[in-house]
Length: 100
Picture 1 (cartoon, rainbow, N blue to C red):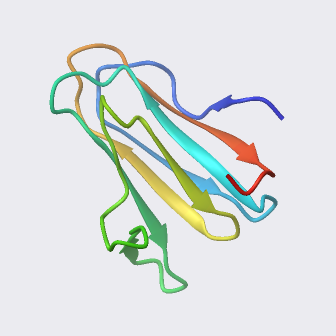
Picture 2: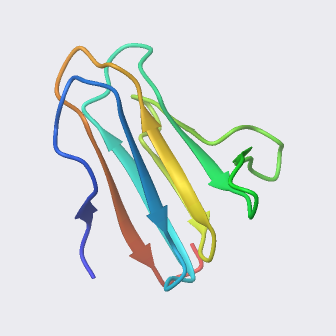
Picture 3: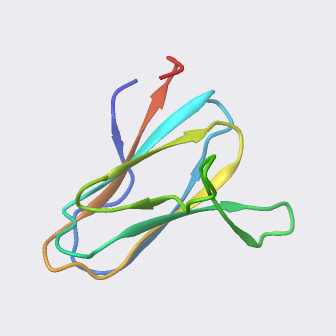
């Protein structure tokens, strides 16, 4: 499967829920970020609350200009959130089968 755009390119803030139930791993991407703009990732807990997604070093999963993608374990539902951006930006994902 190719990269799937989850939101249209826009300068407005955007939030989307991504179900990864059918994938072993996914890469999520934020395009169009500039300067200090970011996009965040949270996991949706069974009670509906947002749980921060962190890596092995306990660093929150945040997409930036320098690092515009994050690899996530498949299975959970995630919320991707992009704030207001200077230029049109969007959120996308791509399934991954390779462990790296």
